[in-house]
Image (cartoon, rainbow, N blue to C red; front, side):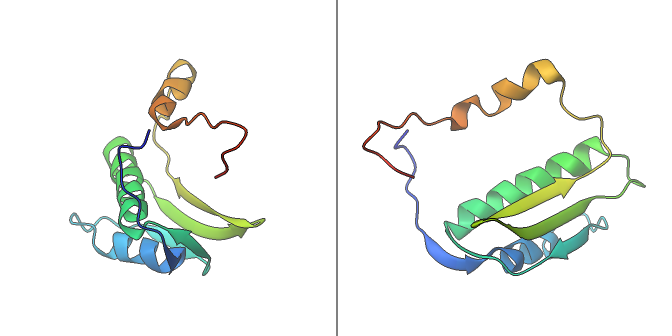
Length: 111
């Protein structure tokens, strides 16, 4: 929507995720499987997204239940996952969660 300034830099997503996991304040055990994947990202915004996903997993998963954060190459991109054993999101709410992040591009624009 053009409201946020993005500062792209070439970064190792695995290193960014490791930093987020190491900096979690509550000390809850989080398992990691992270392969180095380099991408042009806004590191601060990427870290914030990962922090939010982990915080959500911690909030909705029993304390004795595992949380796994993984980073892996995926085609020409990367796949970053936060897996937990929480109740999940109701099917009828899934589309609405990401509505604010949908961007309409004209045919002349590219990502």
